[in-house]
Length: 162
Image (cartoon, rainbow, N blue to C red; front, top):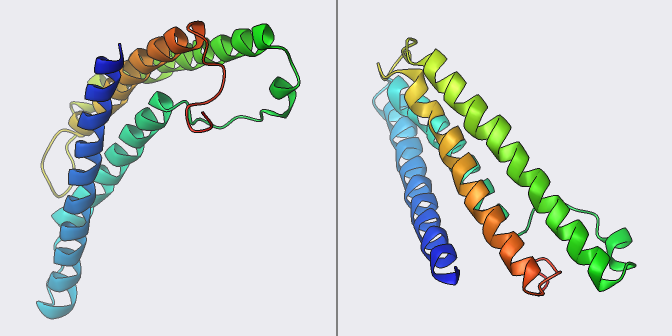
């Protein structure tokens, strides 16, 4: 399971790095065309906004893999190890359900609905850019299953704290 987690994390880190570099380059191109050529590139601006959305959702999947999602541990830390484990598993189950219902199911629905709508500058179906939602939902679900397995093996703390 550790190999699966490491492979997913490496792939997401590469995607995040590539998307960040692409966003920087495209933004520099946008500035160059706007101020030097006096003819702004509308397609680069639109693509950067979609890349930003992709990077944000992929980053959220990375955080899910690290069990770094937002929480308030003050109450949980006062409980015994069994209760901490149960609450840790419960939190992961909530994240799993959210990912399955909102990201996977909702993402598939919105992607299909948006396939008929074209982007203004790129001429690509908007649904193509929404595909990241179900993709990240599946990644989150995989990570939550891996997290539950880790919690069951004895890891009650978040990975960043351990």
